[in-house]
Image (cartoon, rainbow, N blue to C red; front, top):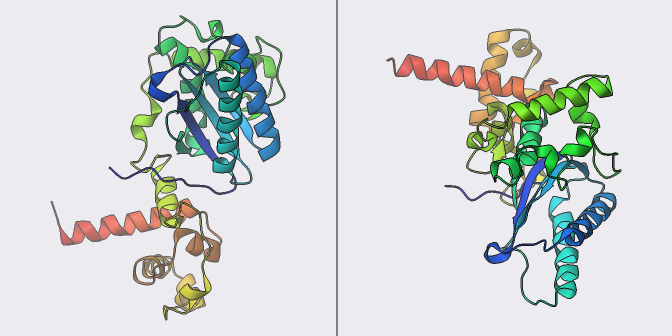
Amino acid sequence: MARPLRIEYPGAIYHITQRGNNKCDIYVNSLDRLTFLFFLSLTIETYHWLCHAYCLMNNHYHLLIETPEGNLSDGMQHLNSVYAQAHNKKHNRVGHLFQGRYKSFLIEKEFYLLEVARYIVLNPVRAKLVRHPKNWVWSSYRLTAGIDDPVWFLTTDWILEKFSSNSRVAQAMYEEFVHDGIKADSPFQYASNEGILGSQQFVHFIRDEIDDGGQVEEISQAEKKRGRLSLEDIFTKEVLSEKKRKEEAIMLARILNGYRLKQIADHLGLHYSTVSKILNKNEKSGNSRSDPQ
């Protein structure tokens, strides 16, 4: 299995988990949980994050974080560091509070954010700590459902607007949606080995765009000097005027000249998923001709 990558770019969304060292509790009492939420709120403010959901269990926590500035690692290092220091000082303990680095899945917003948000707030139910998510006060469920007054560091607009423009109706539909998920399968069974949860096009796009360090990269000057055909040379006016020739040119740009999906899509003014579908269609067509069943 491939090792999960640290993929960071502006606008990326993550499901994050962090566990206690040797499975120890990271919250001893309610004050510890309030302290963590305080540091989480400061981290959200400092790093300009959006928090769509959270759940504080006993020996681990879950976060659903959107990073407009692509700075997850910096923010997580800060959050875990300041909380661990405060926790150790308060409880007169030494050593690591957390078990290694946090784990994260990159989430495609439109396809899986709702599913992951539901998965997070249902953790206490799956762990048989409570029978209903509203009975666990240390998650974002009660805030999103309108049971408790909102807090500034939790972003509920995106989730609720997926149900209704009327806040009361949206909150009721959200409660029903979460309840329907109690017996649902984990969405993470559909994640890629690299830790990407999204459509086939999204996974294809991310795999195509990341460098070895997990950063979405732009075309470099060195790449431009490798002698490959330019996109202008590949996509001439004559080629663009015919659908079949255009699709063949996309294959040429991707497979023989090594252009990334985003580079091709941007040049043609298309969404990356459109380019991915064309590639997949032509690859399947080629396979069916050469290897009939």
